[in-house]
Length: 114
Image 1: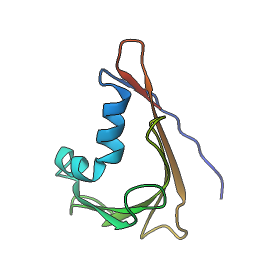
Image 2: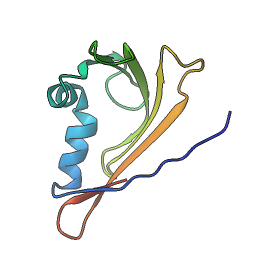
Image 3: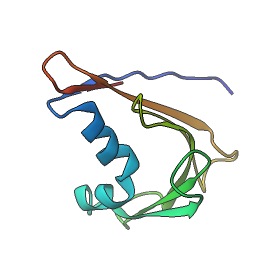
Image 4: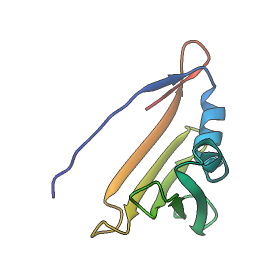
């Protein structure tokens, strides 16, 4: 099995601290509200939401997938970084995808997500 790397950079007028809190720390409450047509709910399956925790994202009937689980491998609230492993019921091995997200301050007071 080979490895593929995809990098993206997105800018936003909101500070890194607020983006990190909303999209990473409190994502289980926010994401279903932002995307109700696709995401039914986000449940904490194991842990307290920090490193080592496992969350399950449950999709609506509009999706090809029933759910996806991801493990929070690392969470740094001071550097606004998160490292996750991702799997679902159709993958043969657990945590086949690795996702790293980092929010940094932009020159205009907003943030850059990488």
